[in-house]
Image 1 (cartoon, one colour):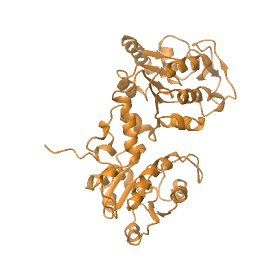
Image 2 (cartoon, rainbow, N blue to C red):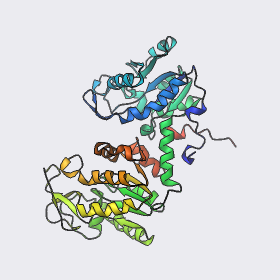
Image 3 (cartoon, rainbow, N blue to C red):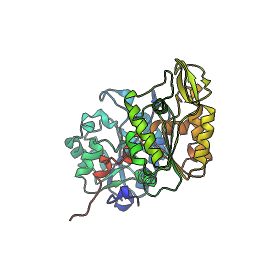
Image 4 (cartoon, rainbow, N blue to C red):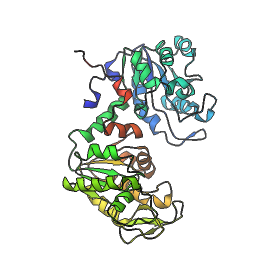
Length: 401
């Protein structure tokens, strides 16, 4: 078992037959109106749901969705998710309109084998984000066992993540969290070498803690996306109108020196796709690493892609976090999708963490070729940088004495 799971029970360690299981899931899926645009998180939750049902548990499932303004905010209703779960499970999913209501206890009395309960968006109740003991007590009054399988929400100290398991004697994690931590621990404990971290996205400041944690573990870094322009400027190169965090230039210079002092690799873009605006319909490729005048970098160029390819293909473990450019604009998605394709072709362990890179892996069509795509963007990064996640810590049954 991964050391991150020490003293934590899994659903397999608990007696759940004929028991009421409060199952906290992460069904926070992207929506367009009432249409689910990516059901990956729903599918990743199915193994735990099916395991519990096969064991004869009575299920009360719970999740948040987005950031509703209150219970009347129907834009964030879990109804489309309940309908999709009904189809996927072949069972009736009963949606309880008020997450903190007493209706659950009455429903459980007559719950049939082909029925499961789903609480409406937990954030409809202000007690959820306030980590309310009162709300937790209400849920604990009908539940025998608590299972957290919401990795993507485990870095939040909310009522369904922390206050509830605090008062439940029988508690543990589901199969998805177990898989997530086992995979992420591979990046921290004895990873197969050479080990490469591919970092992208817009800000260096968002990644400092992860870089600090990985600098002594990895054999090299690839840095693309907008954060690369801060590093290039730190080396004295012109970057035009590209996004630069001027308050992080000193850190970037320092990090370059520290990587060199450790004889590790640091690959930065050697050419770029540039445009006058991120919404432009097309860009042009620079001759080298410098960007002239009032153009801005919006993607990595072809020479960079081939350099990055060689490094990735030569690695036994790759962690990818963050896009290589403005991939939301199809004209500037080539670099990001190229990384997904290169990873798909490589024979190493490839783990994708972070919302944008996970989305890019899905959209590119190469998701099935990854060893693991984390469902928890912020949670995965916080875990990798060594932060304690409230949703895991509350489940540790540390031996006394």
